[in-house]
Image (cartoon, rainbow, N blue to C red):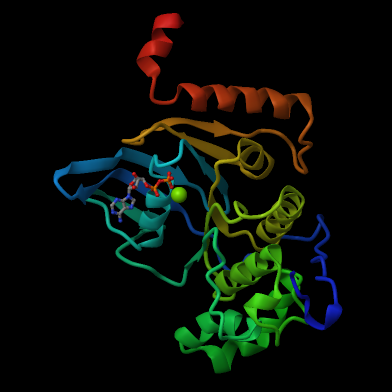
Length: 284
Ligand SMILES: Nc1ncnc2c1ncn2[C@@H]1O[C@H](COP(=O)(O)OP(=O)(O)O)[C@@H](O)[C@H]1O
Ligand SMILES: [Mg+2]
């Protein structure tokens, strides 16, 4: 059973949709130029995961990365995060080449990866302490509790939180360093459908409010269409960019609207045929 601190329900963040964007600073542009990535295998040739990937994300854009399982989505996100390096090609955040991890790129995984022995407050404060700016910036921490709707849970431990609440804490931990870029690797993948839809709205509100460039890996086509400005559809391994789709549906989007469903059908077809181009061409 999931326990909630002091029996209180989590608060829903209240950010009026007309609230002006208050980016902490100019959001970052990402450039991925001719990137190749392969991994060595035991007793087998290296496997090429990414082959000549070229992408540019604009400052403040919301990008969804979608593609078959194992095609290299997480690898691409880890390259942007600087957790792994390309074999060939280069990645840039604005004009700076990415050589390793940095606080200007916040990361949230499917598993919230909170420190179980630290309170939620200490988990969220961790980034500030690691950067050595805790004393200077600790007054901003309540703002992030409010932003993700976790006020009242400062003294709770991760095992007191439901999956959705733990994921909000992980989000606050990434946001407390005011990143230019937020990298999300299937952040809602472990949540039930109802919590997941609520969290999609909450992440969108935070994105609209703070204006950071956001790159989210998802295997859920509806989630990609509901949230993203552009959807990058990747092919099976070695992943190439199958198509980059601009989602020109006004926000807030209606999941059942005809333009939503048309785009859904188009992407599902792309994913179905991704990697089988030759057979597809035969039928065209
Ligand atoms: N560190 C690694 N060492 C060896 N193989 C890896 C490593 N990371 C990923 N891979 C392999 O690369 C492929 C792509 O993985 P990943 O990027 O996690 O795919 P996705 O996120 O699209 O499901 C998989 O076949 C995976 O096994
Ligand atoms: Mg993955």
